[in-house]
Amino acid sequence: MKIRNRLNPSNPCFSFEFFPPKTDEGVANLLRTLEDLAPLEPGFVSVTYGAGGSTRDRTLELVTRIKQQTGIEAMAHLTCVGHTREELRDVLQRLADAKLDNVLVLRGDPPQGQTTFQPTEGGFSYASELVQFIREEDFNFCLGGACYPEGHVETASRDDDLRHLKAKVDAGLDFVVTQLFFDNAFYFDFVERARRAGINIPIVPGIMPITNYEQVQRFTRMCGATVPMRLGLQLERVKDQPEALVQLGVAHATVQCMELLSRGVPGIHFYTLNKSPATRMIVSALRAHL
Ligand code: FAD
View 1: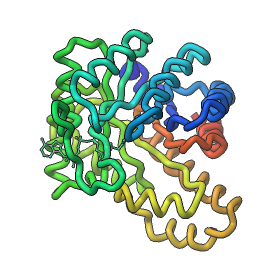
View 2: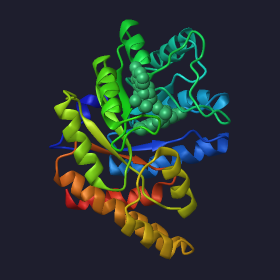
View 3: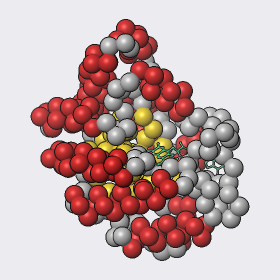
View 4: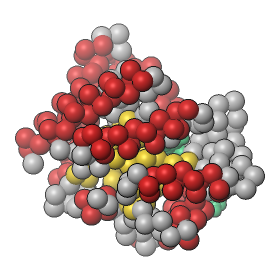
């Protein structure tokens, strides 16, 4: 199933993102988690692509097993980091051979210890180049990409970032998923600017339920997402009370999602961080209101 056919404001789909666990036991746990999530009827799930080594094979293994064992559509993320174009072609061929229909195409972050992204010799500098390559090679994938309502951390200006996004979309993307945000105003403003710039594909909001204080600090530092002042104060107040913190995180994300749905988003993508209970609570509440 091509994800672009599931993204529909009159019947929005929920999707869940996971990262590949490091151990076989972790993989088995994740597959069990997915069986628990299946009754929520996710439109698709996606599995991130690591910085290198064996976790990359696990991404491929997991998406294949998820699709075969649970019947849920599974999308692999793929980055340019450390890959030549021949290696990328091989990965894409393996995904095609496993009958996977969707790929989230990314440039990737600089590997740990490096501050700027260095393209691999014989590889690509930007996600748009990989998108173009996949289209030229005649793979029949539905392609997603990343976008940034608050601007990508490396960009000099939001206008530049939007121009680069337009080039990436024109290279052959079918939909984009946003970086996480905690204030819907960023999303609505971004969609408006994207439409004005001629970007007409679905823009799926990415939501991360907060379940851990230190983690949210780390993530927002890394990706530049703003924590609204009121939410920041509330988090500060419950940072040492794990249950209250999860309740606050779930409540905030639920309110965000309700507003997004009421304003016609084509779907909502949840950054689960492999912790499904929070996502399950939110999606159950939303389903009751749909
Ligand atoms: P690009 O679209 O290539 O953009 C990167 C930067 O280059 C931007 O600042 C852009 O404005 C600029 N740029 C683009 N084109 C040009 C140009 N022609 N000239 C000059 N500047 C240009 N990371 C992982 O490692 N694994 C994952 O699985 C993963 N999954 C993600 C999923 C989502 C939904 C999101 C939002 C992010 C994900 N990331 C993942 C993080 C992502 O790899 C980083 O944000 C990375 O820094 C940028 O990737 P990109 O594909 O957006 O890059």
